[in-house]
Length: 78
Image 1: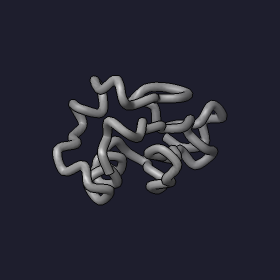
Image 2 (image 1 turned 120 degrees about the vertical axis):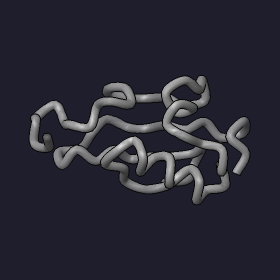
Image 3 (image 1 turned 90 degrees about the horizontal axis):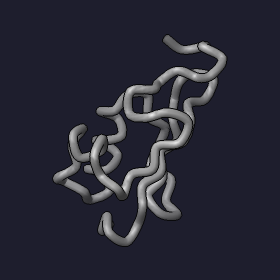
């Protein structure tokens, strides 16, 4: 998967704190930490992805909070 062809979207935290991760039309998984997102991207072929890249890349769209937000608005996950 080429990152320049498929933007990465990390959705707002669900009730359990997990965030859906998509690259283009592909669902990559439910992440509970930033390292989960890194691993999903590596498995999808982006071997150079790391937490710094995720925090800075214009290809990554963080919805409902940035890379340090892993709790839902309802506070069900600490």
